[in-house]
Amino acid sequence: MSGSQQTGRGEQLAANLARVEQRIADACRAAGRDRGEVTLIVVTKTYPASDVRLLAGLGVREVAENRDQEAAAKAAESADLPLSWHFVGQLQTNKARSVVGYADHVHSVDRLRLVTALSSAATAVQRQVGCLVQVALDAEAGDRGERGGVAPDAVPALADALAAAPGLRLDGLMTVAPLAGAYAGQPRAAFDRLMEISSRLRETHPAATMVSAGMSQDLDDAVTAGATHVRVGTAVLGVRPGLR
Ligand SMILES: *Cc1c(COP(=O)(O)O)cnc(C)c1O
Image (cartoon, rainbow, N blue to C red; front, side):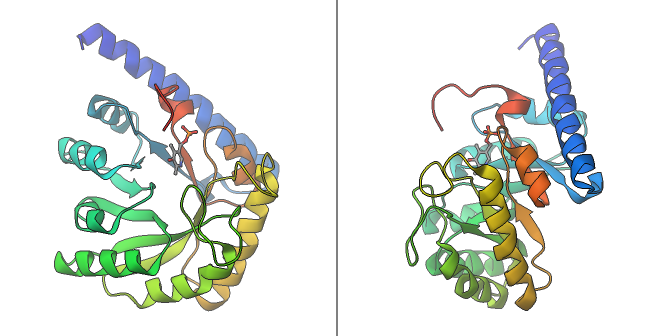
């Protein structure tokens, strides 16, 4: 990319970031929340490491990816930047070792086998990885969600396992507003439900305060409901080519 194209991209990202920042600030104000209670995580999937570098220059400190291969390469190219990496995609156990190499947080823990794999991978490299239980609000009791996550009834057992696992830290809960089921098209109700599950979780795990919810379309609802972390891709980087 030429210098002037890069300048253009930087200006575009800066303008998009400012709009997202305004939305977060407005939602905080309307909800009587402090702006400092909400952390913006920029989801850089499908976009190049050059964008990650521009974002870091614009003050972004938290970035997320959903595929290990892409994330590992981008994190390596960005190793000199003061960034914290979040893994937010469905994760196979055989990728655990790679993911703990760069991720400070994994938002998508949804089964015991993954807890075991992440724990042994993290202890092997003497790292502490913050973990969130992904909640599938469209899954029936005892089931998993279409896009990963566990039904709410499975959260306590998974949370206990995470809290007890060496190398891992139980940091909270994550959800994606469901496209199907009772909460389809009702992100606010979905996020309120997640907050209830979070409150219950904090009765036994008071340090598990992270609530990761809200994307480009529904971040305002997530902030209103009480999310501590929003994961925003499209509204900052643009519409991704293809469906991911
Ligand atoms: C891609 C992705 C996001 C960001 O979605 P946008 O609609 O582009 O903001 C957030 N969370 C997860 C888990 C994702 O995969």
